[in-house]
Length: 140
Image: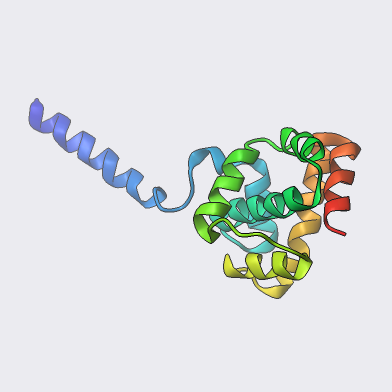
């Protein structure tokens, strides 16, 4: 009986291991799935990319506006953490530095060009026009 339990448990752990290096389960959201399938990037790239966009927005918005924005994005803190883990804590001065950071996540220039509008559209769907407008203003 103990051997059977050991074999079952070991099989379960081995089956679960391939997913361990992809992304935390809380980041596998409709947003990351949509970005992944729509842009041909991994969900891990999508999650870190969203965090990178939010990090950029934080530098461009007031703290009140940034808080409003992040409250409209489910698991925003986890996205930001994923970006920090992949890229380190970096300050982005302009859109070209944002694009460079997204490139460091392994995105092509075509994927980068489509990424921010896709994130902005999602923010509008889940957070409404006010949240979308905050993100749009940060991207200027």
